[in-house]
Image 1: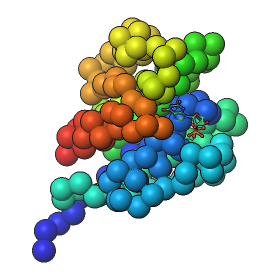
Image 2: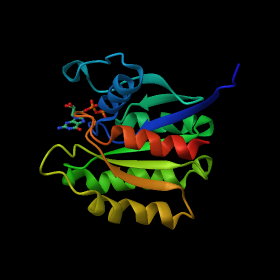
Image 3: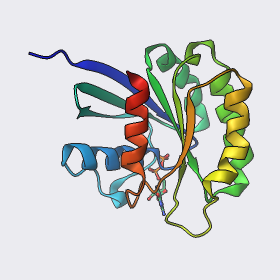
Image 4: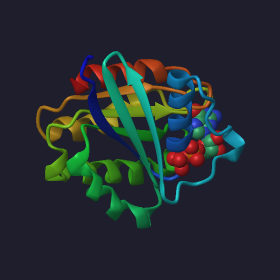
Length: 176
Ligand code: GDP
């Protein structure tokens, strides 16, 4: 019997960024079980969870609600987290500053020091989406500013599934 390593990854970001859609997409890709269809997905109020197995690892995802009132709950999960996915709505320039501030606040927490952080520039299927380079300029500054961080920005479409596998693979390699 081979031992299975278990990891916890929290999915954070503003409301409407696409966190729930991403988690459902991950579940569909890795478990073959179709998650909630996009039209059934509403704002996350509590917590959506999902687990997948890759090689000998089991990764458990926690999709935490994005509304501002829920941000204080996020920090309860930091001590347990092996990885963070921060989902950015790349089409929403109006909330980019709010998004940046939110990310900065997460990165300031002592508990997330040393935890790999994957930033996802989501909704790349839409032509108005900011390119990953543009997102990098805004978010990498924060990640690097806070020390040598294991961080990455990747483009995805949670809805169409593009880039989602690459994203999970990157995180998986950083979790071991
Ligand atoms: P959450 O609040 O962060 O959990 O966001 P949701 O997963 O509920 O998604 C918010 C809205 O964005 C929904 O209408 C989704 O269908 C839409 N959405 C999420 N990901 C994508 C994407 O990759 N492309 C497009 N076009 N829409 C997306």
